[in-house]
Image (cartoon, rainbow, N blue to C red; front, top):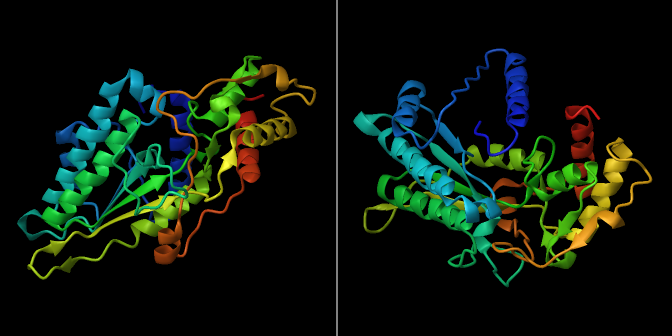
Length: 319
């Protein structure tokens, strides 16, 4: 609920969760406003609710913002995640059953400028090109250490360019829409020659739900010590879209939804510019591990996803 972007979008999401929870008998939902960097608060929540499964999607996101505001990333992504790991560790104190599975958000950004595509979870990812990517790789390393030391089943999910209704305004599809509506120019980096593996939000949610129910197995090695119950998966559409094609689909769907007029001059508002620091030319997910272990592969087409976004945008902003 911080003000990194429009809080009204976050409140809209919470209202949807409240409505969904109220419609399900015997289902309760509790929202606690706080900061995961506050260790006492995190510990109090764990002690009060004693979670069986922990899904940590709390993080400071965004590649470019990490270049100008690094403090936010260290606080949330490093200190905050450490607090959650510590709370999971102490959930086993005094013989308690403790946390059965920790699932956390990583990012396709960890692949940096990896030349090999599609990106596989078996690839080496030691060369991040942004602080954001470095914090996400750090999360994976920290989780591995805690899985090894304390036998905590943990799974990291590398999300690929998530988009959809009520998404982040700093993402290209949302930011482009805002600018076009104001008559401003949109910038296409690398002169439009970027490719992104756009993944619709419903596919991300479905992936998280499936993964959280299947923790890595606890096993003991020949040395009598735990083999880390640890896993990493890509969640992406496995279908990189060229930025120019993406913009064409977006403009068609914005016109169809009535967000922009049918005679809008898109060409006059496109600006081809060089690559930005921290960006990469292509993202492309190899999801074979996710398909193998959970029988799931994201499949929502970019057109279907952008259509739902455009319809939401029209309704949310009352256009």
